[in-house]
Image 1 (cartoon, helix red, strand yellow):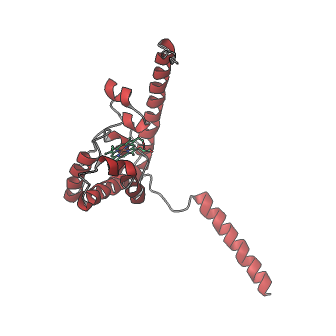
Image 2 (cartoon, protein in one colour):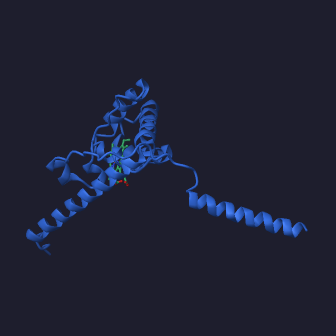
Length: 178
Ligand code: HEC
């Protein structure tokens, strides 16, 4: 009897898991229907310097609807995160979680760069607060629109890579001298 009940329980659990998976697990709001995003073309300089598709996207965030403390955090973020590459790299990157950004900021490269004028705990906190809030607003709540922008930037980046390849073929690098 007990075995029958156990078997029934297992079957129910398995069915439940399958339904959960089919249904997609935790519901993620796709937000309002995606608008055809008009993404401005990056300048020739930015196209030339691009290392990631994200580099080709917008390099500012419209923070007009963000709360005042997050707007202050944005100023700190814009100061710290635009010193080596444009803000576009993080604005259009797929990263969402605070822990990814914590890991990134703690990386050796960042520490070496700020050697001598280390980032204060407050500044790091502000950058993380901004990145977390902004990601939830643009990348999670408006996921459909963000995905569309991402796809478009990837297409543009492919085109940039093709251009670079053509240029290389037209002007091959000089033979290395021995
Ligand atoms: C010391 C110079 C420097 C600073 C300052 C800097 N970055 Fe970067 N970042 C780089 C370099 C170089 C890369 C190229 C790829 C690599 O080596 O990870 C990069 C890559 C990235 C990437 C792409 C990583 C990937 O693997 O997809 C993101 C996102 C990013 N940076 C965000 C930020 C944010 C946010 C800040 C501010 C907290 C910041 N960066 C500040 C140098 C910097």
